[in-house]
Amino acid sequence: MRDPEALAAALPPGFVLGAATAAFQIEGAVDEDGRTPSAWDEFTARPGKIMDGSDARVATDHYHRYPEDIALMRELGLDAYRFSLSWSRIRPGGTGPSNPKGIAFYDRLIDGLLEAGIKPMVTLFHWDTPIELERKGGWRKRATAERFAEFAAIAGEAFGDRVDSWVTLNEPATITLEGYGLDVHAPGLGKTLSVIPVARNLLLGHGLAVQALRSVPVRGRIGITNVHTAVVPETDTRADLAYADLFDFLHNRIFADPVLLGRTPTGPRGVGALGVALRALSRTSPRDLAVMCQPLDFYGVNFYFPTRIAAGPPPSGLGTPDGLSDAMDGTPFHLTEWPEYEQTGFGWPIAPEYLRVVLEQLATRYGDRLPPIVITEGGASFDDVPDAGGYVDDQDRIAYLAEHIAVAAAGAPGVDVQGYFVWTLMDNFEWAVGYTQRFGLIRIDFDTLRRIPKASYRFLQQVLAARKG
Ligand code: FCB
Image (cartoon, rainbow, N blue to C red; front, side, top):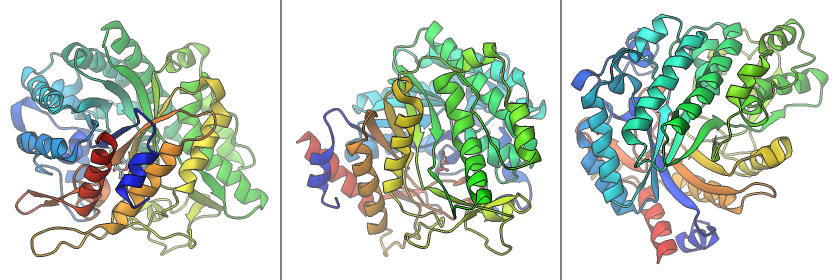
């Protein structure tokens, strides 16, 4: 599939190829035009939280350079572009009046995309909770879900006439587990049992936001983005099976089952007191479940890699590059390696066949309740080596993307996969690891902020041109 023509020929008619970004990772301009801080601004300022000690005050400077970025997307020939709105740019502080200058920025961005023939897909929440709301308990509090629905209504009113697709939340599993459960992401609480109320409030926020967008009404399609991983026990021992089931529960099912089935997932069993506590906490009222389970026009899936789980705390010194194994020190299970696969820069196994497994699992678990699927993120970081002119010949990224796009395009029985969004358009601020992992189709020279398309950009450009031609 590394032949662009062959990949183009494998794409079903209407299959959307896009690229994705997130506001906090690219915009910079954190103090400009009325924007106020988010939980991530505060987290990055805490010593020792970001691997290279960096922050996102400038990031890629997209806030000022967006015309150049749109021009690059146009040249690439993208069908669609997924980006997120900075909540505290549009509604500083998360409550009160909206900020006309914040809205005007996204107006310019959306209009520029439409002029370039690129469909805008808007994510309402990609983790940057306004700090004032975070200080009042953030997603541990139901009130945050209500404020989020108000924000959705503001965004719907402002952009609903032009946005093609809406994603309410990006990866509620990640902010819940890594932000509230562990201490890897903002807000960095490290409170394991807070994960269940946080998950519940996020999903309520999702449901209320869908209702808010529909009542505007907006013209675009509405969905959510969950990150899915296929979970595999390391061995067939009872303990490994039980902890693999626990991980599947925590990572996949508590976020997908209420949204798609309107029910709390069963389990987890066989993991002692932790399981009992999680079961008790996850009981959700029928009324809340009904809010979470709104009819959706599509279901967004982010897929990066499968997960292998073994019982017992992580062996010390594993130190995976994404920081997860260290952060999980003390948990009763751990993530183990995939020696049979090559790895990305983050140490993630490159296993496109597991995207197929995820699709099959979605069909089995959710049957005719499953909306059409859009892969809203997929991609890989590598140790990009630029030549003297800054050009990166990233054949490894081309292989990753070509294989995963081919699996997505082939779909699976009972699943209608409608598109694939590459993570990400350009190198950016990669959360807890700062600027140390590069995922972009476009290289950013962070000293000069120069944008230099990589070989993977050229590859995708050829795929898009071959398909259109
Ligand atoms: C996903 C996030 C995205 C980016 C990629 C690498 O979990 O949604 O912002 O960090 O991982």
